[in-house]
Length: 153
Image: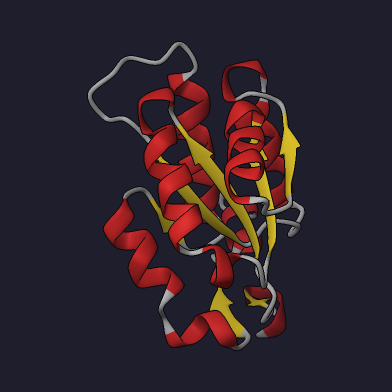
C-alpha cells in the first residue's frame, strides 16, 4: 500500500466544525468572539442552533447543518469521512445526559479514526488555534483501513 493512502493533508484554510451542547453554547459563542480574527480565516460549520447563535453574535459565516439530536452530529461525522471537515471544536457537557449520546460518541469516534484535531474544552481549543500548524498545511497519518478490512475473521 502506498504511503500516500495512509496520509491526509489538512490545508492552511481549515474546515472547522463548531459544536456545543446547550449548557456550553455561551462558552462557545464567547470563545468564537474572542477568536473571531483567527476563525475568520477558515471555513466554519456548526450544528443547528450553535451555528445560528455564533453567526448572530460574532458575524462569522457558519454553515449550519441540523441540530445535533436531529442528525447534525451524524452530518458532521459524514463530512469528516468525506474529507470536507478536518478540524473540530466540540464543547460538550460531560455532566448532563443527552438523548443523542450515541451520536456524540459516534462523532468523537469518527473524528479520532480520521485523525483530525479535536478540542472538547476551551483550553484545548486555545492550544489548537494558536498551534504553528494552524497557519500551514499539516500532513496527518491515517489508520491502514485496508489492513483492517482484509483481516481474517
